[in-house]
Amino acid sequence: MGDSNYGKIKYSKNALFWIGYMYRYISYTREHSTSFVMKLFSYKQMNEVYYVFHTQDSEWCIRSLLEMNHLDEKIFDKNYRLKQVIKAKGDY
Image 1 (tube, helix red, strand yellow):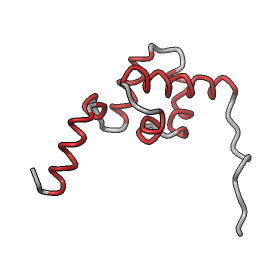
Image 2 (cartoon, helix red, strand yellow):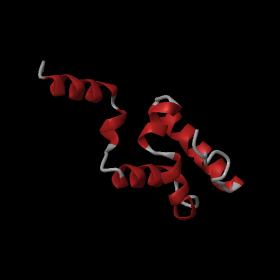
Image 3 (cartoon, one colour):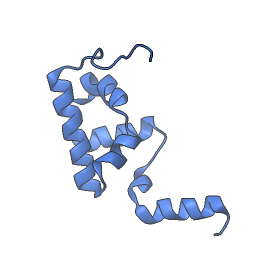
Image 4 (cartoon, helix red, strand yellow):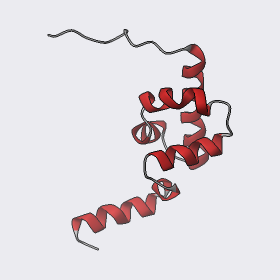
């Protein structure tokens, strides 16, 4: 096996706390699993925006993250996502 980066990338305790809080806040308020939210917003992206976002309102952070990823609130609508899958298959 090749070299591993496991354990070499370090994050500050405050950044980890904020990232975890935001993942859970989004999961709770949008009624989705944390794993779904983590697929939308990677921990690397969350760490990169930490210093700018951590003092902002949580809803502002969500709007900004969605905008950065070219998404909107519809992504949290389960029916909308199902329609997109059906439309992509051509059975719509």
